[in-house]
Image (cartoon, rainbow, N blue to C red; front, side):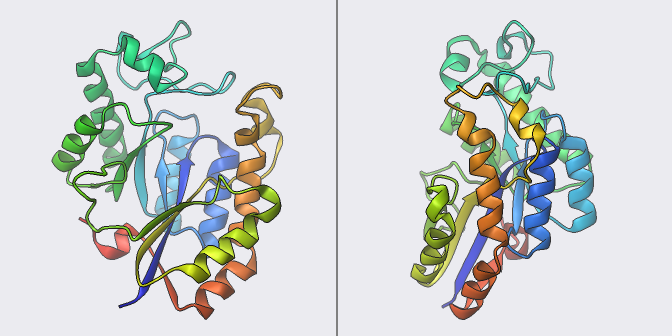
Length: 253
């Protein structure tokens, strides 16, 4: 047996700060794969850069836009997936109240097709914010022939021994928590999910400072990058015999 660890960066392509932060973490050797938000403003550049840097990509399927000032728009003409400004609704709860299921499927199909059109074969799919309908997503993932991170029943293949979220850890203890988690890993396949970004003015344009999402605009992302690129992470992985892998490395499915 061995300890294998996938380090997954979410929200790739969301904006330049996020794209560049994920690439920095990948080039440092920590992030092993990312998930692209196809409707996001920096998605095209992000996919091109991923190809150049050898970053495996899954598809972070978008049906909601949680930011006030940074907007994501459907790829399809689906009217039931839009609010007044033409962007996605702010959350899945609002989406469920208005979405035509057929338009949801068409939009998800379009997002995966766009990644493949860019010459990228997705390693997996997953939902942004929350899952609209697990049954629909699992069925689509099977049809696309990709692993689905959101599919909990039946178990995912390959099964994950642990799935741990770096982004929810307190900034003051984030690095220490990350290292402690790595030291605790038993034999098996594990995943850490993070949201790294480089600091800059762009992150402060996502929403108002008094928004409940403000922490996720900057603090969470910048401290994720700091923890992942700290030399102590690579050193601890080496000391514990942890092999950093991606779904592309494992040739899944």
